[in-house]
Image 1 (cartoon, one colour):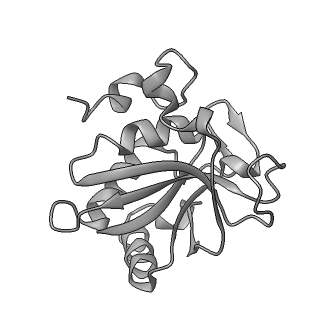
Image 2 (tube, one colour):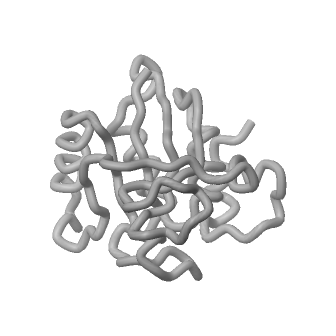
Length: 157
């Protein structure tokens, strides 16, 4: 198993989408690359993200990044849908250097690569979100989500 962290605006929708992608075996709502370690503190530079554990024999990282790009506006800076602020920035994080290189190559191969605002950097700090944020849209399907419903339920069975 391998893991990568996707930041795509509000983590509720990102988690709900990614957990249904074939080959994804586990997801966890959290925060990436901030400065504090407590879950009940201000965001302190963190990006809302989803830890995504996947089986590379069933789905490649490049495929996962492609799916991720379906649910974000990759040109937007610190904003996805109605969610605005640094914590809603888009990013791909990993402690695996090959993952980061693959993500950079994926972006470089796009025709709009010069306009892409998705940060691709090493995961330096991760904090799991509080329990009420885990699987939020599974438990409360009518909560707000910036991802269009047709995309949100694309892989749901």
